[in-house]
Image 1: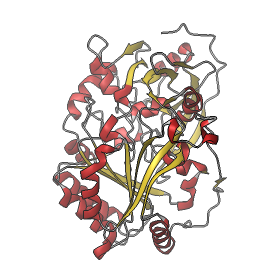
Image 2: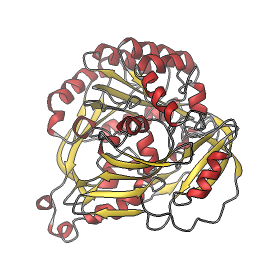
Image 3: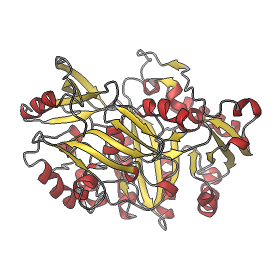
Image 4: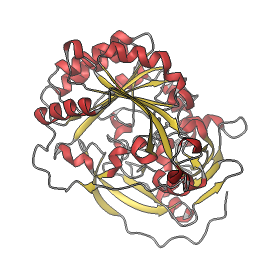
Length: 469
């Protein structure tokens, strides 16, 4: 581990009302900023932790309450100069836990390297990506982000910093408890990640309209293996013969020979754009209502090509389209929204159909619903992905009948052998998590070894009793 530099000047703690990206639950937390190289300051923070504990918080893009800590401390690990090192020879990047994926991409794409796994936003930190064990459009090929982490430096509750990794001899048990561990094993100070070599900053994308859910599942099952990236937008309000009508988008990184002469002159040019920022004062209840969402869904389905092959699309447009609109979550108004994301195993397609049917028929408007295929799980006890279908749906907060509907959907998911994504969760129960994650007690045992006094805590860890009943 590199020698610590001169500690940053202390930043005064502030009491702040925090919420997740969905904005559905708000709690007052004491926010403290520290740099990863300020080990003395970090140790003092942990030693003086209040009874409600400490949780690391990145950019606040997790949807629920996993990165807030009512009555406790939320630690913002600030990025410092020189916290990123790219090694083209090994195709790896070593980077601070507080550095964003956006910053990594701005440095790595021009060097011919891309993130091995990218979520739908680049505005998350590396530490948050590991703690959530994020997945992307390529899980069926490349697995989760944590699968590509070669080592990480972890600040324990004792103040000790340990370097751990996925291999025997590097405390693999603690490593895999940290991957997907929601920040409850310690603070990820830095990590070395294996990157994906690319020739260009564009993707070659195939798009097609799919008329119904059965056709979509059959198409993805038959030939998703031929594409590195695959995702389907589903109209969750369509019913009857159109149930599950979709826009299926699949592709891979474009090669130089696929570019035009003008594009090939600078094949790794990377310029993520920004269109606008949604203002803070959106009329109540926001612009997301049943009428506007139904109109959007119809337009989105009709504007998609019936079948288009090999369209060249810049990386930001393919992977992070919503990042072009700053604070898009404000469109839901002051009540915010809930994202409900689950996975059901292959062979449980009847349960998946039931989910889509109940969402379409339950009077719950949604425009952002995506379906992906997951491949094999990794060794992390709390990693969300498992072989099967994952469905994610955004629903405006305060929607009538939402709570009982989600409880009903929970039963469908769990009876099928599925589970919920902790990073997105704001509505499920401790019993549902225990049932969906059969290795929870195994994770707790490792976590308690790393933090016997349970200094790492969050609102979610208490709500779902993750660290014990």
